[in-house]
Every structure is written in C-alpha cells, then in structure tokens.
Image (cartoon, rainbow, N blue to C red; front, side, top):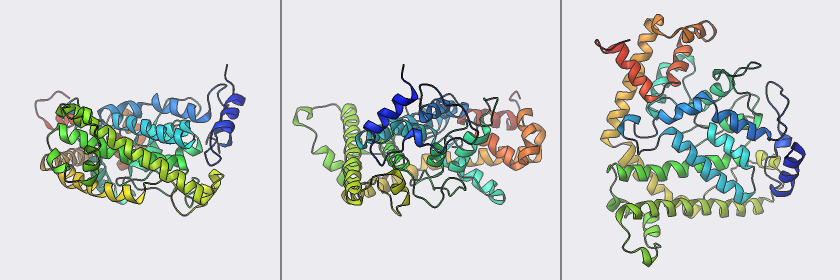
Length: 384
C-alpha cells in the first residue's frame, strides 16, 4: 500500500523544484491527523467533490439558464473542464496535479444561481455589508457554510487550496487579499495555471454553446484570425466532414493550441527567471504562467466577439435582467418577512445578521430552486 513516505518520494522525484510539495503544506486551520495513503491535496479534492456546494453546481448557470436545455454547460461541467485542462498543463510542467485539481474543483463553489447576474444582484443588495464577491464566498463556503464534520466548521481545507481560491483571477474574477493567505505574494504556479485553464474553458465552451444555440454564427467567427488559423490547418482528409463534427474538431484544436502555447511560454519564462523553488515564484511581482504575446493578440478579438455577440445578446441580457429581478425580489421579501426563511436559515440570523444570512441562503440556491422558491412566494395559486 502507498504510504506518505511514498508520496513524498514521488513528489521529490517527479515534481519540478518550483512546484508546491504536499509535505510542505502550511497545514489546516484545525489540526488533523493526515490520511495514511492520500496526500493533503488529494484529501482536499475528495472533500470538495463530496460537498453539497459542489453537487449544486450541476444546476447553476454558466451562460444559459438550466431550464433552457440539457446540452449547455452548467457551472459543474465548466468546473470539470477547467480541472481537465489545468491537470494537462500541470502534468506537462511537472506541477502538483493534486493541488491543481483541488483548486480547480473549488474555484466556483461560491457562485450564485443565474451566473454573474446573480452575483451582481447580491453585490448591490449587500453593498453596505461589504458587497458580494464569489471568490470570497467560495472561501466562506469551504471555511464555514459546509456543515458535515463533527470537529470543525466547513471543510478545513489546506492553506494552499484556500490561497488558490482567494487568489483566483480572470476576466470575470478578482483576486482577493485575505489576511493569513499571503496577501502581498503572487499566487503559486498551480493557482496561475487554474486561472488560465478557466479562461480557456470559458472561451471555448461558450463558442460551442453559442454556435449550438445559434446565437453565434460561424461565418462571423471565420473573420477572426484565430479561427482562420485553425480552419486552414484542418487536414485535407477531413475536407468533407459534416458541420457538427467540424465544429467540435475546431473547438478541440483551439483548446489544444492554447494549452500548448501556455506550456511552451511558461517553460520559457521559468528558464529565463531561473526558478528553482515555489517560494521564488511567490516573491515575483509578475505571473509566470501566461499566454505568449502572439496568442494574447489572437485571443483578444475572439473574447471581444464573445462579449459583444454572446454575453450581450438580447436573449442572454433578457434572462440576466429577469434573474436579477428574481434575486432582488426574493431578498427583499425575506428581509421584510424573516419568518418566510427556512428554520435552518433563521438560526443563522443571530450569528450572521439578517442580510448576511439571507445572502448565504440565496447564494447557495440552484437556478431551479430559486425559480421554484420565487413561484411559491409570488405566484398566488402555487403551493408553498
């Protein structure tokens, strides 16, 4: 049977010197005896997968609300795609894939129903209480709101995974400076890789879902250099491939091209900076894991196209506005009538205050639960 000493030996022999080693963890808030044959990050990953918050991601919006169809990505399928892409990059760079996976699986646990629209609504409603940020709420979920263990609140994750959650950043996510989580240091390379994997997953599955929903048009995408470069490299033997398979093929090639670019560019920067420890990475005033300048230039028009043609499409905007209204009306009803809250939530009011307890409750809802709750509370003939 594998033991802790074997895990240490593997990490020493395989992982790069700039990778985070599990045996160097800064530990957990509540000390525990570690598992005999799982590393600290493997155990974190498993706790995340078995959490209620992780299961709820299946019914939380990515771009398309859950009831719009079974095909489209949800927050859960997005999370799994981020994990897969991040693990691929991590293995190629000899980073800690267990830490990568744990951060990737946890990075969206704090998301609200209805995607960023729900987050925006809660941020406005909680403006006087510090607002709402899903990175901060992800930490709140793993540190406090998950309630499964007899010896501590939350999941009691390792310092490194919690730091990865706090410092997650992307076009949609702002890194947090949290006391006790090295706020003035750069994130680990493992965290940086998850950030990039998140961007790749976002862009490419949104292209896929956008084309499938017919909100996007491939003839418009063909004007983008990055799309042109992929199209012209499709082998001649696939010249007569049907439209559906060609779309999947192009998306697959796009992901592969961007992943390969990250690996090559990051390796180049590691050599240039002569990195030989994870501590060195964290002291740098710059990110090490990045796209090349050429790839950044190719990706920029694609991301602009998605922003203007998918995220701002009138159908998406209509649902976003409806979602904000659902959230605001639910929040205001609970605020004016706390007795409408479930008893378990009412118990949290004394500890957290009414607004924060309501915020936690709504943030933990899935899309369909929020819609059902809205109907129960506002539709006159709906059973409560």
